[in-house]
Image 1 (cartoon, one colour):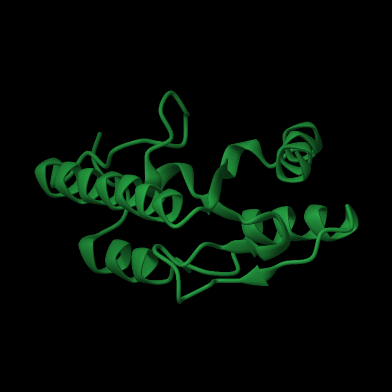
Image 2: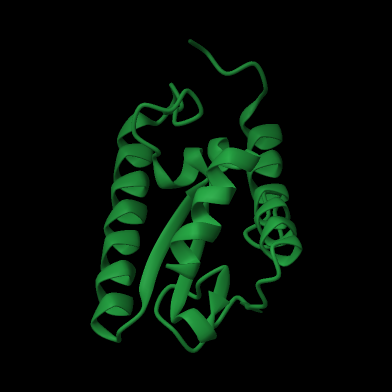
Length: 134
C-alpha cells in the first residue's frame, strides 16, 4: 500500500512524535498516583531510562508504544510499506535495545514491568498495581 503523503510530509510527521510524556505514559502515571504509589520519572541514571521508577518497590516501568517497540500481535505494530528493509532493521534494533535494558535492570536488582500502549485500560493497570505491591 502506498503512503498517502509525500516523503517530506511523512518525515515532518514522524519527527514530531514525542518520546516522553506521551498520552499512554500520562494514563499510567495517573493511575499509579491515584492508587497511592509515588514514583520518579525518566530515571536517566538507569539503563533504558525507565518511564516510571518506584524505588520503594524496586520496580521500573516502561510504557511502550506498540508501533515503535513492536508489540507482538497488536494491530498498531504495523510496518510501513515503503523502505521496508530500513524499518525492519530499525524495529529489530529497538527490540534488541529493549531486551538489553531489561537484562541490565534485572542484573541491578530491579523488577521490570512493561505496559503496552494498547493496554492502558483500568483492568490492566490494576494488575500492574498489584504486581508492584506484591
